[in-house]
Amino acid sequence: MLANELAAQGKLSADQYQLWRRNNDWYDANYTNPTHVDPDIYDPRVNPGAVAWFKVSAQHLIKRVDWYLELLASHGVEFRRLESSNPGKIIYEDTDQIVVIPTEQLSRT
Image (cartoon, rainbow, N blue to C red; front, side):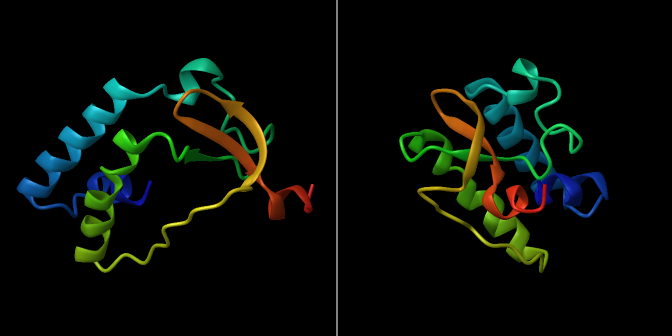
């Protein structure tokens, strides 16, 4: 995630870092990390281009995304918020999310 890169590079203010850490901890406690189920889910040799998408029904997770988008914007980081009814081939699914190999990536393999 782009916000994690900002934190790792030391680019967040002390307040931003505290909020980033709090939000990441909240997400860790409130949804399943796909890598805990399948450690190779994001391995590019196994699943090239794999990316997670929240389901529309996971509003409790989606509503917190706006904070990350505001953080990125405040640092001049370009981003796109995407919504799709068919983001690609589903390789993992749980109550709140799917992990897919994007359609355009499938055509390259």
